[in-house]
Image (tube, rainbow, N blue to C red; front, side, top):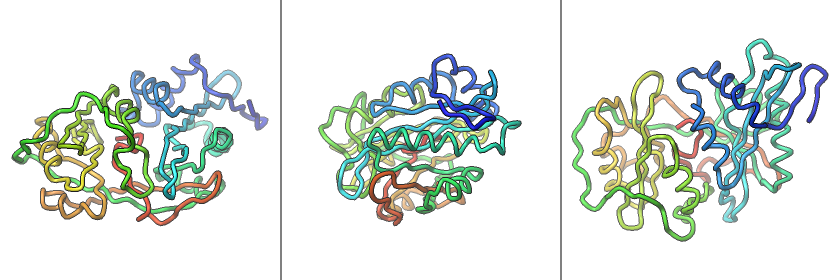
Length: 299
């Protein structure tokens, strides 16, 4: 426990769950985590999680989390932590609660051996990360989309995938990335309370998700590992639920022509990727990283 004289920071306990969820709901409305997703995201992550709350007296006025992942960093498997699901109660803003919670988690993550701390920052948190917390901007990752409805012929060899059983990291050929072994993928998609379905084509796979985004039903290519993404993209597009307004994706640079051929185009939306080294070096060349929408906490 740490104290500023105005508020105190304490590690999360189950008794704080309702207050944590309440603050997320106050901040994000229908986009906030429901209880079952909150429990799955933090309690079942195979690499672990960090959560803390800020109190003024008996009232919880700030919450923050970090999700730990195994990543490949400069060709070596390391532990990393992502800042996720944080907010401060409106009357308590301006007291430095968010950066204090982040510093607490950075110290705890470093003690666990994390090499870097990363985030896809929101507009309000960007100046805090880049200012008092001393983070570095890496780059804006452009989101692409395909408007619907459309008719896409599914690829004959793609089929729904009940569980991942492969050995090792399915994305081993990628630059810096989250390790995609079977344990991670089964937690992240198969066991998720969210709406995901996975498809395979030989050794390749893709994951299609559905959600409500800004009041509209959308689909998303949550994850995709394939040298040629077109067969799996066709399978995902064919499985999009009726009524979905668009399909979103985060294609790698080399895969953008394949996405464009299937009707995807860049949008005005982007992920604001940034980070900080806890031990060693933070790669700040965005071309040296590769992410999908499923690597974020909000898709």
